[in-house]
Image (cartoon, rainbow over all chains, first blue to last red; front, side, top):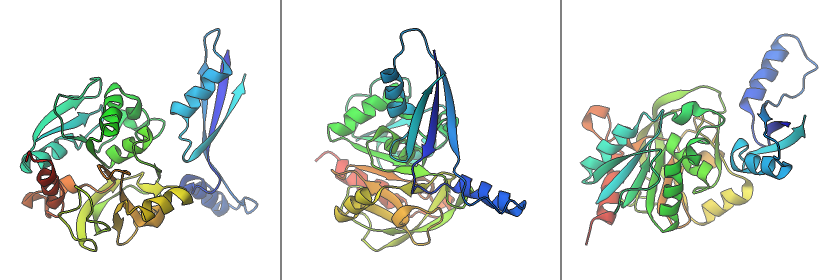
Length: 76
Length: 222
């Protein structure tokens, strides 16, 4: 079983790296870019028997800091 | 009086913190991150600056899950004292001992220089050697020192007089200019600036000395 975890900063939390990417795209002439948010993708390879509840616990305890980040789990 | 300074792979301010404690009269034990217990009779735990575990995942995230951090959490739950500086502050927020989180500096740059700090409260074992309103010079050296807390948490920190230090000129985008905060019982301090780097004449400044001296005053056996 494989799972892909997407971790993004919550809305309202400043993302300076995303802003820097947006500036760079603007400077390259991509005027159509109005906003950039940068996040992380974490791929998990899981043994038989792992549950979605296990993955949620991993996200809550380590993979995301829920003070500033939100996450989505995708089973692949 | 005994202090324990935690050493993670990637800590680089551990010795500086130990020296500052020693100069204030503490006996210091260096404690490895794989140890599951603090030495008997420790009065205060110091979580030092550096780049524990290479800042992988998030600054302080992996360190917060190390065996010794469980012991540090238990120590603070029992009412024990602790101070986290720089990466140590990041680790204390990742363990949940202190609220909020540290984000990438708003200007994206690593900043290493002495900054002005305003002492916001003298009501703690860490800050009673200063007067509220004092402005002191303490070095910062960080890439992820942009303190973030949601509006409710920020209001609570301010209402409970738990903001220990603010920047006189905000270098990193921290909400409320916050440079350091206290736990609810005022026995845990987390701060991004490095008081242990302003604790000796050779450092070019000694404004951090009063913090360690105040601690020794509070923790000295009666």
